[in-house]
Image 1 (tube, rainbow, N blue to C red):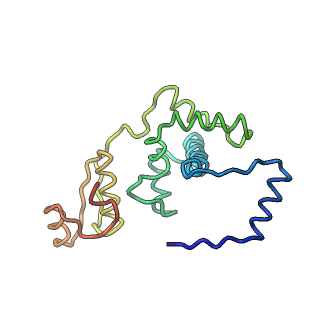
Image 2: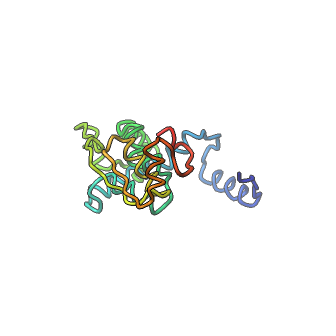
Image 3: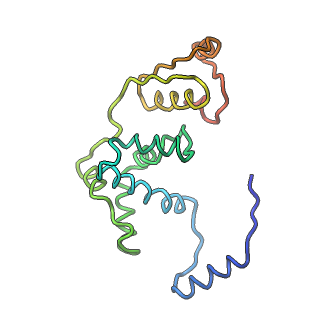
Length: 178
């Protein structure tokens, strides 16, 4: 657990900036912090899809999981957005655009997904995961939880036998529930 260590110099800079910018300071809830951090990220994901830099929303999630440490069992930002509801995210972005400007302009592809009710995660795949170590097993569990047909391949028969007996050979918070 991290310990707080307030920095009065930084607090004074923030206070001076907010006063000079006529920003009313207030308490911000954890939910609002998540919205402000994740909803623009999800909007950028839609722009990436629109530009063709990624083929599927799950491609973006895989980058976040394997490249940036997004918790595997939470699926990635695009999957998270799907759970929250892209319509809710679109509405939030439109409200923020009105009050804060064009930095919050929704992606046209996000608008299309919402208006045409496109399900980005409506397809199921057969997935083979090679290696039932930490990354392989957690990834396999998340894919299976999303409804995909997952096969784990490993040369460690002890691990495979544990899995067949519904035992988990590693520890990851939340994995057993999946």
